[in-house]
Image (cartoon, rainbow over the protein chains, first blue to last red):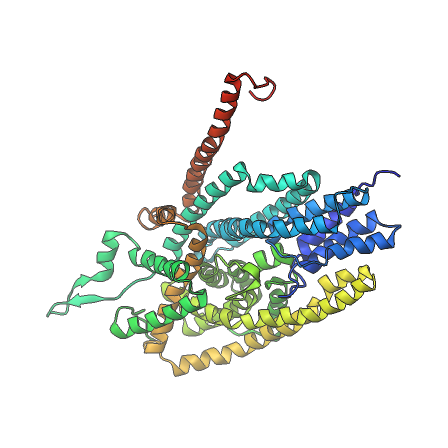
Length: 279
Length: 286
């Protein structure tokens, strides 16, 4: 029996189905399971064209629940494409159980790295730069983001999918290994600095609190005093307060927003906050 | 400024494409069209005022800069933020006659958008629940080995969920928005306590967005230093965002090199120790 090899066409189709369809039919119960099934379909069809029973056995493997960070998760789909090919060639150590064990074992760590690296760092950095280019309502920043992010996402996912297919689980070791750790640490710091610059540029918490002398002149303007200590101090304090409430007090973002509404209301009543608007 | 039915339907289609389980796919839909900055561009084009759209989008983008949805729990819905919140905020700005680039304009846009985004989580759960019907049909087809129907389940049938929970709500909210905005304007004067609170909340809300992001980065107090460095670059030194990113990139390179040095040192020490003991085989390295 000739060695079965997945064609470039089938692999491309499998990749594109994952790239587009990983979350199109989302539900809380099955999340990315249908995206995964659709991505494996062209591969299984090619490998088991003449054997409906093995086709069914193979497709049933991917009915198991799956959810991870979809961009980085392309590597898992790529790895299973390689494993499915090995199974079609009669590899004894590859069965439904090993494939699902691997998927279940990888989806957690990949989701963790992906959420903090892609959604928590790369996207905010790109958005930060884009917002820097949006001054005066210029569409340049938005166009920059559309182009750079989509090129990065498409070719990055493509690279990961085919790396996963070629190298199997070794490809994943790259992500969690030494170089992967060093890159993540560097990118996280880059993200931290950019987010700092974004919050100083786009967030502005100001107080209107002041003390007046008898002649009605303000002799103590709190905002000026605070800014002479550290420009934007009040903004930084509020950001760190929100962080503390969420990270240390385990409050949900929605509850923190609720607290801010109360803070704003009380602040307006006592004259700490005053946007100073009228018709 | 008002929104006609055709503009509302276009916005509704973009809402369908961009939501979290959106039909534009994750990269193009949720992570591109769903970001408020991009939503601002689209709304600006559709409503014929690109600068206002971009300014409103950028203001809201700060609140949602780190919108991570781990395990599919959401605290805000991007389709509602970007394609209901932004158009309504644009109408409100025009109606109040505020400059979108001013601090007040930004604050108004942010509190409007965040309110709508929070209410919009209903749309998220609605879509996800309706998708269960198509998935149920999908499992039946898989049992019957009719695998060719799987793409129908994943790519086509969810459009029905999105017509119900993205397109129609967007059209209704956008069309109803103008009278509601005018009503608020008549009833609540801008120098009254409710409006002052609304504007103040708008200025405070971006802090939550930034803090969500910091929660991912900051493990101990020292991790605040990179954040405060960036803050200082922009607030004290007046360096713009693009230039700040260049400086941040330089710092990142230094950290990468240091980290690699740190990681390779034990390995190099181990191999030189092995060489001294005479076990090393020369082909291995260097």
